Amino acid sequence: MTRLPSFERLLAALERLPGIGPKSSRRLAHHLMAAAPEEAEALLAAVREARERTRSCSTCHALTEEEPCAICADPGRDGRLLAVVEEPHDVEVLERTREFRGRYHVLGGALAPLRGIGPDDLHVTDLLARVADGVEEVILATNPNVEGEATALYLVRRLKPLGVRVTRLALGLPVGAALEFADELTLSRSLSGRREV
Image (cartoon, rainbow, N blue to C red; front, side, top):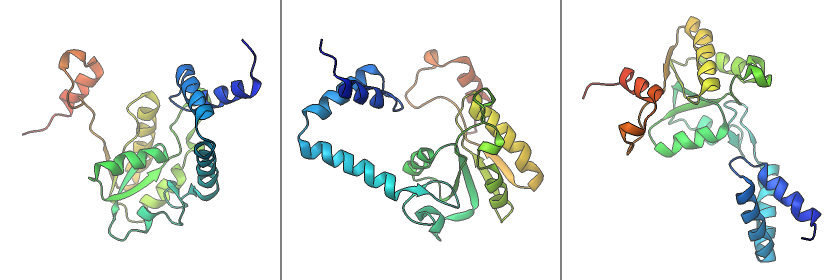
């Protein structure tokens, strides 16, 4: 097979994207090569424009094109409620539920000492300052993995002395799942987080 250095670079670049493995990167690369020139140019222009116009909100650190972001600027949002998430895309996930009407704070990651990510690498200082400015409840919405749990525990220790109510998203069985396929940790959390009906 003929070596195609530029195509190989495209494959490697696509494979570095989260959730894209070798098969998906090859499929995407072949699609881009077969696409009409206008389609490929539109993709390039969209990426370029997003990179130029999108930035981090100075208040909550979510992605925005405005300063502050639309959520921070919305007077209809409850400033007493603050959901703490790891990454900007987590804000989008919670917003899709249309259940939460408070504000957000994006940490910019989770504690991961083995990868050299400590509290100073996250937006913890900003969080503490925001909480001291009238927040009544902080909802910890970090991921239910080792790093997310460690981050949540660290934040509880930092937030409790401020006299704020600290809650954690409930964890348990997903809708439509069968008990037989749930792992022990998920079942344990489902039992401890049960509520009266």
